[in-house]
Amino acid sequence: MTSDQFPDLSSAIASVHLICVDSRSNHNKFWQGYVLLDGTVFAKYGRVNYKGQTHSYVCGNIVEAQTKLQQIVRDKKAKGYMEAEVDRTPNQSINFEVLGKRAKSLKAQIHHLAIDAAIIHEQTSIRFNPEKGQYQTGLGAVTHQTVAHAQTALDRVLYAQESRNRQDLAQAVEAYLRLIPLPVGMSLNPTALIGNINQVETQRHVLETLKTGLDRIAEIRRQIQVELAAQVVEQTERSFWMNWGETEVAGIEIEFSDTRSDCVLWD
Image 1 (cartoon, rainbow, N blue to C red):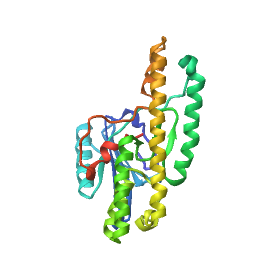
Image 2: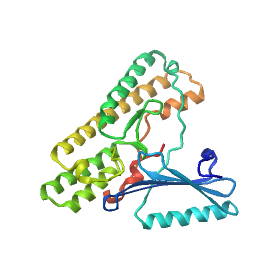
Image 3: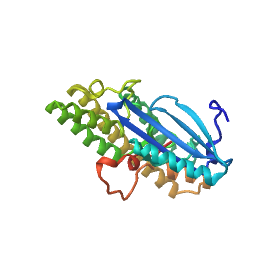
Image 4: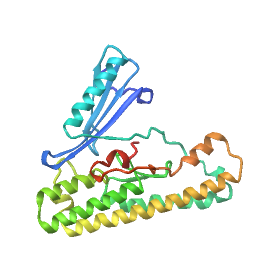
């Protein structure tokens, strides 16, 4: 397989998704690895928000491919990469008709979410996915927990600015980027990204807008489930709408310093 060929990753028997944010090395990278049925490890890697490159490791069989993937992941983690949880659910066209009398209202509410999300996208790499009811990025889906941890990171950014500690500022901005990716370009410069009070306030407004949007998604989800409970709906459609807006990860008690794998769901 050449580097410009892209296999069917839906049939992969194992996959790992990693990210690395380090301003000292100008790193804002991702790495994704897949074990394929032919015993190949297919990797996609590059800078966040960019298309990335691909590489295939030809192994003798699936067992050897799994061993190879585990070896690569160990090496990547030793270099500062962190693992993220994966959501492999494909997008599905929206059929509002199954929502009965609430269909028109729910469609309008979801449309307004998409319009308001444009404000968020102006300042971040976040987009709203109406098919899943999620705010999504190249790193994954944003949840209430993501926003809460991002607010903590932003407080650290502000404190580092006030204390004029460049190292603390870099680390705080890195923590923020692991949660709320920004369009950073090819050069990762913490001072240029969130280096002054105005930039902090801009990101604080983004987080407030995200929180409001997530609250609205939760309310729309509640309305959808009420409507589904009141009528007979084909199983596939029911499953689609029951999963709409479901992004939260329950039962997590972890340290903030290592939260990325629990705060995102990959798309």
